[in-house]
Every structure is written in structure tokens, then in C-alpha cells.
Length: 146
Ligand code: SF4
Image (cartoon, rainbow, N blue to C red; front, side, top):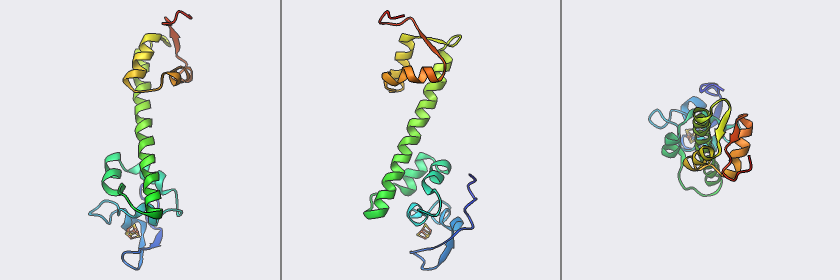
């Protein structure tokens, strides 16, 4: 997906009462996106994925997150959830990087794995699954199981 790939799409602007291209909407707010962009473009393409891809959490908070009734409120709530998912994804990527730093020869001590889970607020019961996905073996089990 490219940032300008939807620029030529046209919609009717409820504020201006005429047609505008998407490029106008994404620059309408002093170079930033119009706050109604998620609502106006909902259903034309996957606008939430677009916002997630091309705007930082700071931008999302600044331009889009606001309380609103009805459909706009619903879309903004979805957007907030997308932002939270993005934060979770970033946190998980940081955890994976930390695991790779700690692991030696594809192994990590149980206590280190637990400490990393605490540090990144990652559920301990998910840690085993994540280490399996990364093909990293847990050694020196604190419970003495292995
Ligand atoms: S996003 Fe803003 S500028 Fe674009 S059509 Fe909607 S109200 Fe108009």
C-alpha cells in the first residue's frame, strides 16, 4: 500500500458540499488529515488499515481520536483499538528483539524469559508459545521440570 494510492478517489464532502479527492482529505487540516476522514472514506477502501500504516499513534491521537456520537463514534473507537493493537505489536517486536539478544545458541534460561515477560508486561502463559514460534528452547527451569 502506498500513501498516495487512493489520492484520485472522489467523494462528496459534507462540509464543503461538493466533491473532493482523497488527497484533499488527507491534507485538509493544515497539511494533516481531516478529522472526519475515517467516516467519510469508510467502505471505499480499508481506511483503518491505511491510517494504521501511514500515521503514528501521536498523529492518530491528534487528528482522529475524539468522542463522537453514532457512526463516527463507532469508527473512532475502532481506530482507537487499531492504535492499541499497533502499540501491542510494537511492544511484542521489542520483546522479540530482547529475547534474541538474551538467547544463546537458540536457548534461554527460564528465569530470563520470565524477567523479559515482566519487563514487557507480556503474559507468562504466552511466553512459552512465543519462544516455540521463535524456535528458542527454555533451559534451567525454575520448577525443576527440565
Ligand atoms: S474527510 Fe473532511 S474534507 Fe474529506 S470529505 Fe470528509 S469532511 Fe470533507
